[in-house]
Image 1 (cartoon, rainbow, N blue to C red):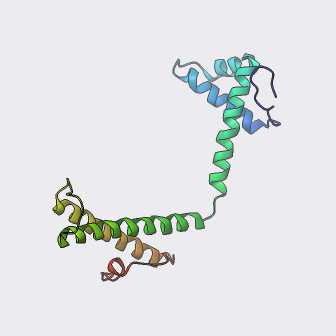
Image 2: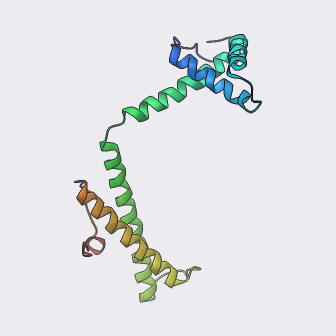
Image 3: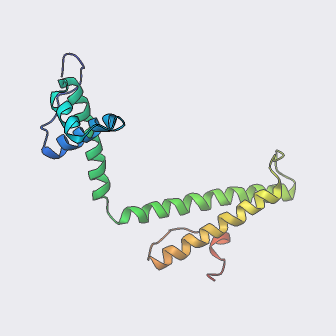
Length: 155
């Protein structure tokens, strides 16, 4: 660890990381409309602790970019499944609340008009239908579906 910052030492730095760090460094100078040559000279003569800071940022940026790039095509399918499950769960809770309101068993008075809540439920059901259609086209299994949101016609 460095004595001044208590940061772990930097790993070996390759040309890609160095270039990204210099670009990050150059962003603060970009507003001054300096030429890229001046930015490069300033980068080369910057204090070691300044360069280390930008190199650490570059390592983080590149690691995140590499991780995003290597994600598989199945990631979006899983995100779609999760989105659908969360949507149907929320719609189910809203549906239950509206039913309890209609039955007179709701233990609070909604501040929002019931007509607006009903419209919200209609939109949520329509969105669930769109997700089901898309999943069908893309051959994605959404898992368990509530009967009340799954039985609408496929139009």
